Image (cartoon, rainbow, N blue to C red; front, side, top):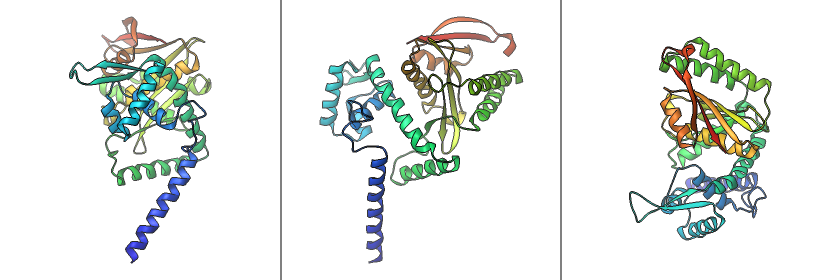
Amino acid sequence: MMEEQDRERTIQSIRRFNRFYTKQIGILESSYLQSSFSLTQVRVLYELAHCDSTTATELAKGIGLDAGYLSRILADFEKRGFINKNQSEKDGRQTILSLTDQGQKAFAPLDIGANEQIGVMVGKLSSGEQNRLLEAMSSIQQILGEETKDKSYVLRPHRPGDLGWVIHRHGVLYAQEYGYEERFEALVAEIAAKFIQKYDPKRERCWIAERSGENVGSVFLVKSTEDTAKLRLLIVEPSARGLGIGKRLVDECIRFARQAGYKKITLWTHKQLHAAISIYKKAGFHLVNEEPDPDHGIGTISQVWELVL
């Protein structure tokens, strides 16, 4: 009898939480963020925007969506010019889906709007309350069976203390992995200080990747000129590499830059940073200049890359 009462109490508590949370995020509204898209359509756009390529079968399985319903959404997206369909090179029976530039532009304001909506919701919370919220969400995912222990992370805006972490971890990791001296840490500190002193939230951003309550990555997009943004301080902790965090951080910079009205993104890096350069290449950046940089070690080559938006 007691077990049955406990089960009923659990069911009613979960349903009460579901009613509360669906109201919080506006899931019952006919459109998402007052756009022309439903929440399901935005979810499909999100999944397409965060993978290089996928199939309809993989997409339906990942989202848990009825195949017929997904097919109708994809047909609508194709008419709007949002998606590309290409035959798989590995298996000619499969069709590979990816977002077009037009699809990326349609998704960008929705993504930014969602971030701003959640930012307003959690902005009322203290740092400790935000950490409790993240831990609670992680616990729910793990208990209900989603494998998040090794893969889950969140991207969020910077908050007090984050820039100190960015400076510290750049200093430590670049010394360990590339033999950089303290002058590089000083350069990072200078970039971080200028970001805070001249921060323009409409045209600049810092994203922090967080996993299990710990910072594991960062990237900055800052104004260089009215038409040009600069991508800076991309870093991913060794413990979190291989999860796609670096690519996701760069993608966020590109989407925000387009939304903010920039025409070009530039970045400065070193030739030996092969993993980062691979991400930049895949994102569409191309090398425009390189030259020796003895300040960071004999044989070091600095490079400038750019992406026209």
